[in-house]
Amino acid sequence: MNPATPPEVVFAIPGDLDTPTGGYVYDRRVIQELRDLGLTLTHMRLGSSFPHPTEEDTLDAATQLAAIDPERVLMIDGLALGALEPELLAQVHAPIVALVHHPLALEGHLDSFRREELHRIERDNLARCVAVIVTSDQTAEILTSDYGVPAQTITVARPGTDQPVNTHRPTSPPLIVSVGSQSRRKGHDVLIEALSHIDHLPWQAVIAGSVRDEAYSTELHRMVHDLGVEDRVRLIGAVSPEQLQQLYSQASVFALATRFEGYGMVFDEAMTYGLPIVSCDTGAVPDTVAEGAGLLVPVDDPHAFSHALGSVLTDEKKRASMAASSHDAGQLLPTWSDTADIIARVLDGARADRMES
Image 1 (cartoon, rainbow, N blue to C red):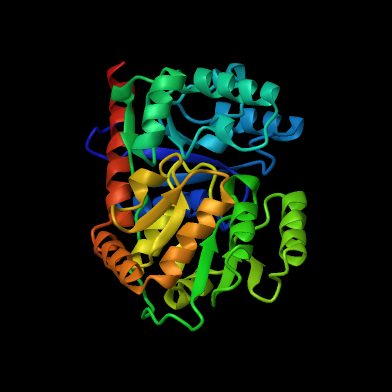
Image 2 (cartoon, rainbow, N blue to C red; image 1 turned 30 degrees about the vertical axis):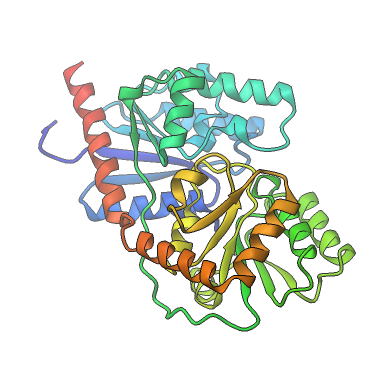
């Protein structure tokens, strides 16, 4: 194998690559950019039941992964890596590079047994990887401190951004936009309650994001009705990239009452539009939201969240200052090409290590 040629890569990802969530957007864009760099990259689709795989999806994944040519490099998304039993991953002969968006054990509403099980699986599987790619410094620190991953094997490849295609023209009354899947970790229940506390102010709100938890989605719709904000809060589900860009261009504030983020690409998107941000002091959020661009409050505190939102809506000077900081930070964010360059170097290093061994 010629060391000057790019490595041949298999990228194993569970489920539908077109799923409209941040993790899948990251994977899609990385695939596109790596191919543009000249890498021969094969997308391997694993079953959609990960990270809680059925027996059928587990067997299928084990079979596909074990069949990968050891001369190739396997890059595997954390949704699968963190849920596939280590004895199955041990059957893979190709060098393994993990892509971890955030540890699966940090997902909300797991019982203690499943949380401990996912922690064990991910810890053991990460130990088999020749390199680990993460999307934030926060996730890198967690993997080092809680999963025993050597810091020198971890590379941070922050998500890229696209500059806005639409001019920012905020609507009246002010539009509050929240983007995140309808799953408990995203904290939309906290946001809806917080909005009900400032119903004396003029605003409209849109919550965009795919339904990942049907029971939680039903709970959110019930809250909107019971709190009397159904004429002001819209839960619109998944949206196209063009619809999302339109929402950002019309917004005055971006709000996400998240309970944890391994990165949070939506914050970068909001900053490219120069939006003031209200969110929570958790996970990678403080490192992602630029200084001066956001107000961060404790997790699960709707009263604090409503106070922060209210202050941004009513204090024009504060809102303008936050918007300026957000815009300035948005101009300095990496591109997807930058992200792919970092990942390509990691993949090339994994191939080089195999050649030397």
